[in-house]
Image (cartoon, rainbow, N blue to C red; front, side, top):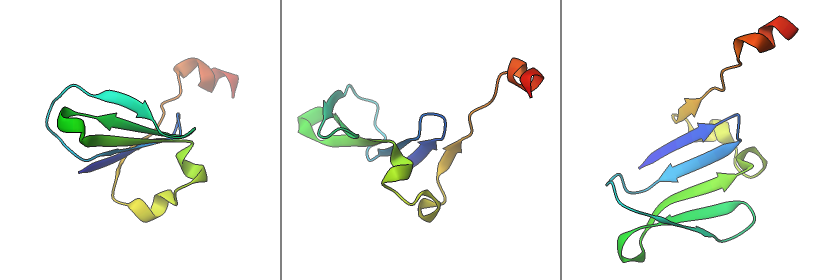
Length: 77
């Protein structure tokens, strides 16, 4: 199992099966998308607007992607 969070998109992804396979996305609610793989097994769970629903610091350790600001943004500061 692998849990990762992208702060730019506020997206939490929980991967339950590490095998490479084709998946079908099924939206089960406004903010939950399931990745369904072989034999209708849930391969991954995507939570949109994750910080509204999950206490992220309780999930540590997770792979955490920090959004990098483009160089031009620093010029504006």
